[in-house]
Length: 205
Image 1 (cartoon, helix red, strand yellow):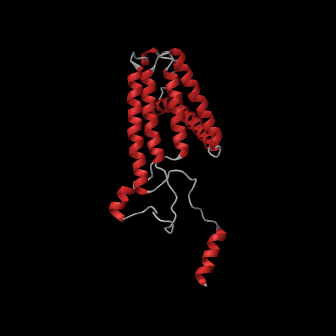
Image 2 (tube, one colour):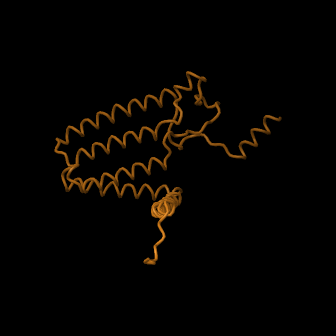
Image 3 (cartoon, one colour):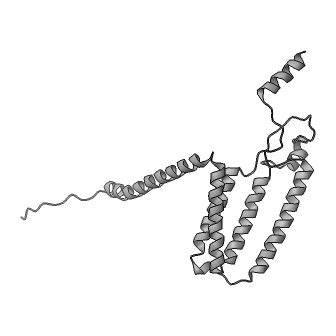
């Protein structure tokens, strides 16, 4: 009888554990990268001016790239439509006053004596900046792939975009005038503690 050493057979549990180890490591790595990326984004939040300067630099690089390549007009048209949608979200209130007016009555102040209510955007400034910057970066990368360079007569696309932009902004401005709101902070009435205290003392007298 041949007495030979037999290697222990691998159990299903150990095989499953070995298979899950690489995926678990990749998951942990993705989570760590995502956390570091979000941390960097959070650190840039208060630097509004520098963020938008960086965006305009990226946009200028993309424009120069398209100008010298003389192509990728369909990519630019799609980018313009996406920017227009972001702009409408940035200029629109979080809750449509037309819907609230039908359900709860007027909600935005229409007279100087009305209570001041801050404008809350449907698309916050940071998300607007982040989305538009990411869109330009993606469009810039797409200009290195000839599959996206579809032959097209670019003046037609430019004309379509200008008409769409004009009609959309005219409708948005009409909506602002109708419900008397301004999607910017300048020119709005602000209250400080001193004024509030004075008004309280006058009411007590």
